[in-house]
Image 1 (cartoon, rainbow, N blue to C red):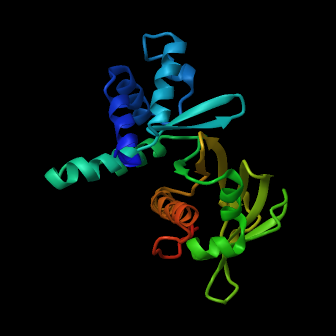
Image 2: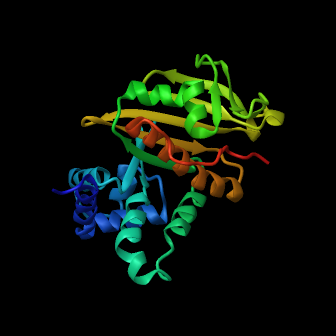
Length: 263
């Protein structure tokens, strides 16, 4: 019997087998976060055909999309490539090809007013349960190492509170958008920088049904620099893996508390 992992891997290899789709990934590698129109400028093909190729890449989780007003931005998602590397490359030729992390950082550093970090994960759950896992103080404490505390109304304050009993909040912010169970937008800042827009980053959680599971897209933007970007690029995958494990198995993975540091 074929596993879900093998089925997902087949989709990745099928997507990569087409030269046009590889060129689209190359374009996103060079300049991440492009619109359909921007991608079409470099592909001698009708918009409808490019859209179909992008759909195949998205189905294979090789790209992620984020809505910005009327535009849809496309981002390279290196996670499936990392998984192929670990399964099919590292065990044969470990010293080579450890470049995906650097590629992702270079692509994100090239962004200006676009989201600076985008991560997509698929969870066998419901949108309501994913929403609750992001906003319930007890649930976040169990897999994040911090409790997310708020009434989650637009304009309300929220806190990322340590679970050691000290009551200390390492991150604070404001709830910008709260549309249960599909979209949550919050600002993030160190307590000393609360209220300073120039010191705040912004996190958006987009929760969408995907067949009979859920696609969760996390967008973290307005980061302060390369150091914070590196921390975010390491931290979010760990947190979201714990969340996925909690919802699918009933318990989180062993983990260390993580938060986004601010200078």
